[in-house]
Amino acid sequence: EAGVAQSPRYKIIEKRQSVAFWCNPISGHATLYWYQQILGQGPKLLIQFQNNGVVDDSQLPKDRFSAERLKGVDSTLKIQPAKLEDSAVYLCASSFGWAAYNSPLHFGNGTRLTVT
Amino acid sequence: AQSVAQPEDQVNVAEGNPLTVKCTYSVSGNPYLFWYVQYPNRGLQFLLKYITGDNLVKGSYGFEAEFNKSQTSFHLKKPSALVSDSALYFCAVRPKDMRFGAGTRLTVKP
Image 1 (spheres, each protein chain N blue to C red):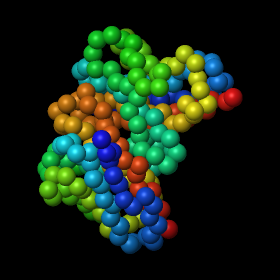
Image 2 (spheres, rainbow over the protein chains, first blue to last red):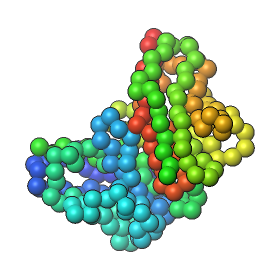
Image 3 (cartoon, each protein chain N blue to C red):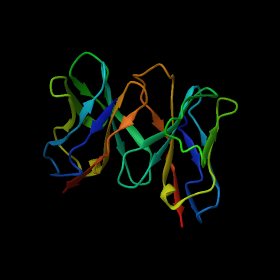
Image 4 (tube, chains in turn brown, orange):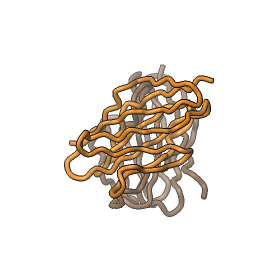
């Protein structure tokens, strides 16, 4: 099966600019996650979708971050305006079901964002 | 609240020796525990999980993990390390969202 696809792989922007990341999950996976991984740290959940609805966005900095999954498949994560501390790898993951807590997550290769 | 701790930032072992990467957890109720591996410039790859049943769980690439409820631990093990095992390893816990530890960098020297 095809894995989780993310683009772009790398992005360099200046602070206060905007940026968007795209994710296409594994076919049939209802749940989609966006994680932020700062260098030297474990991934931190930003937002979780079940189909096209938000399940958890408690750790999403909503003043500058937004995400959508309009048709329950692809998703985009946007940052506007970016800050220096947003430099990180943004990982998209998907899993078969939200209530299936025994399901592992399948990750894409991530987008490495550098804010200068 | 749920959390995991990986007490070692770095683990070094010689090729052919056994390896252990430590993980302890805190969760209300029954834990769902996972190990992932991350190679440079790649996403995380699932290695193994513990949901219920046998405390010794076997996973990909010869890795296994031992669940210890009394010590709230879920240590990752491999009987004989390979240089190609060198990577970043993350322990994670559910239910609710998948909460990750800070990671342990494993270096296997020839």
